[in-house]
Image (cartoon, rainbow, N blue to C red; front, side, top):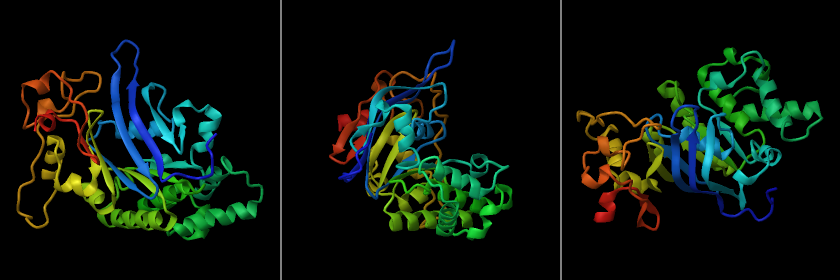
Length: 329
């Protein structure tokens, strides 16, 4: 079990984590390979990359919630001094929601349509914290809804009676139900209009500062990353492309993929400039190209890239990238 005392400043260390999806009769899909990251108390870590690069798989593995085909084939997830991958099902269930919770992508699909929002938040609490006093439980649900800007009396309503933004707020309330130290937010503003996205972002920032949460923010939105995150992990094809603090990633990117992503980001100082795009498509994880996974799309590719996957290189003690160009510079 995890020791409650002397919580270290480093909450979580993911070391060389690798995950495959196994389908009978087909080669394994290497969804995540050799990913390392550190999450500290109160830190907001942004996880970015194109769809299918392994972001959600990586996050689900931290809570041991991978689908049946998922296999963790290497690495460790040290949370407060304990490797979560070695815990029994009983012990990992004690970690979920109480210590690490998740705001799942797509609030309408994550909420049960035939149960009230209040009932669903109550269940998240009672599954992990013994609470026999119904009045106290109802009060706690009301407090959580009020915390995220929903009137407590609306706990008796069903998800379809909430707007998209309210459903996302309800999911945030559920994630905070057991006062976790780490919240994983998987695309928390997907399918919301711009104004509601801004409100959800502001809410997450306020809660992070008020409650001292550590947040892992999974997103495609580089503007959201620049606004909210302290550090950034850029993934491509299941591997780490680049990892550093947010200022370094935006101002001194070393990996061609990071550079191309930033070129595709609108520049408000030059609104007439044509946005760049990255030609081609991300690789299939069960049919990866030889060498660097970004090589078929890379504007700086050279012969070695097609035959050898680059190692992770330390540009500085806090800046890492997997690119042969960095090694050769």
